[in-house]
Amino acid sequence: MNNQDNQKEKLNPSDNLTHSSTQQVVAKEGSSISNVIQTQNLYFNNLNIDLAQKSQNALPPFEAPPLPQCFIERPNITNDLKSKLINRELNSQGVLAISAIYGLGGIGKSTIAASLAYDNQIKNSFPDGILWASLGQEPDLFSLLRGRIQALDEDKTFIPINIETALSHFRTLLQNKKVLLILDDVWDSLHVQPFMAGNNSCQMLITTRRNTVAAEIGAHTYEIEIMSKEESLNLISTCIEYILDGDEKEEASKIAKLLGYLALALQMAATRKLRGAIEWTKLRVMLEDEINRLSALEPLAT
Ligand SMILES: Nc1ncnc2c1ncn2[C@@H]1O[C@H](COP(=O)(O)OP(=O)(O)OP(=O)(O)O)[C@@H](O)[C@H]1O
Ligand SMILES: [Mg+2]
Image (cartoon, rainbow, N blue to C red; front, side, top):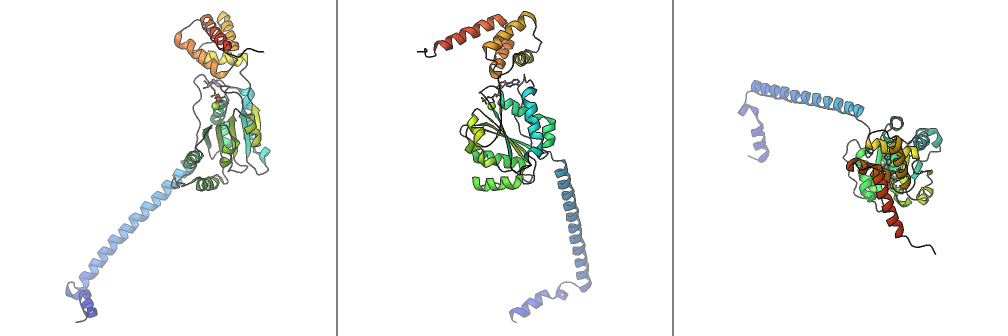
C-alpha cells in the first residue's frame, strides 16, 4: 500500500465513526465554535464600546506644578497674557504663537505660568491639553520630548528610539490639536526648537531669565516686575494667615522693601516669621544685619 492509500484509509470515517455520529460531532463542534465566535464578537463589541466611552471620557493631558502655598493672584500681569493665549485669531498666520515671561530669578515667572495653566478659561481654550516641561541649563531634550509624547499619546504604545523619531511623532500628535505647551526655565533658544511642532491651533509659553532667548525665538515678551508693596503685603498675609495692620503692617512693609519686593525672598521671610514666631522688628533687624554683611563683601567703588 502506497502512502496515499494509507492516508485515505486513515481518513475513512466508517472505520471508527458512523456517518450520523460524525454529523453529531460536527454539529456539536460547530455549535461550540459558533458559541466561541459569538462570545468573541460580544467581547470585541464591548471592548469597542469601552474604548469609545474611554476616548469620550478621557481627560486631556494636564501638566503643571502645584501653586505655592501662599499663592496670590497677579492680574496686572496675567490678564494681558491670558487674553493673548485665549485669542487665537491674533495668531491666524498659521504659525505657532510663542509668548515669553521674562524676568529676574525668584521674581515669580514659573508661578505665573502655572497659574495660567490652572485657569479654567485657558483650559477651555486648549481642549487637547496643557503640557509642561522644565528645561534648565542643560535639558535632556529627548527625555523631555518622550515625556510629552507619553502624555499626549492615547494608546501609549509608541516608544521613540531617538530624538528624530520622537520629533516626528510629536509633530504628528500635535496635528490639528489645540494644545498649550509651557517650557519653563529656558536658557537657550536652541532648546526650544524641538518643541516648535504645532501650528496656529497650539500655543507655546516659555519662562526665561534671558531676554535674548525670547527675542531669538520671536516670542511676544512679557517682562515681569518685582511685586508692588500691596502685592508683597498680600503675599505675607497669605503666608501667615492673617491680615496685617497697624505697627505690624508698618514693620512688614519695611521688610518687604528690604527684600526688594522679590517674591521668593518675601515668601521665605513670611515662612520664617510663621515658623519661628519671631517679632517683626527682630526679623527686620536680622535681615538688615545680613544685608549689611553681604554688602561688605561687594568690591569698593573706585
Ligand atoms: N504669585 C505668587 N504668590 C505667592 N508666592 C509666589 C508668587 N510668585 C512667586 N512666589 C514665591 O516665590 C518663589 C519663586 O517663584 P518662581 O519660582 O515663580 O520664580 P521664578 O521667576 O520662576 O524663578 P527662577 O528664575 O529661579 O526660575 C515661589 O516658590 C513662591 O514661593
Ligand atoms: Mg522658574
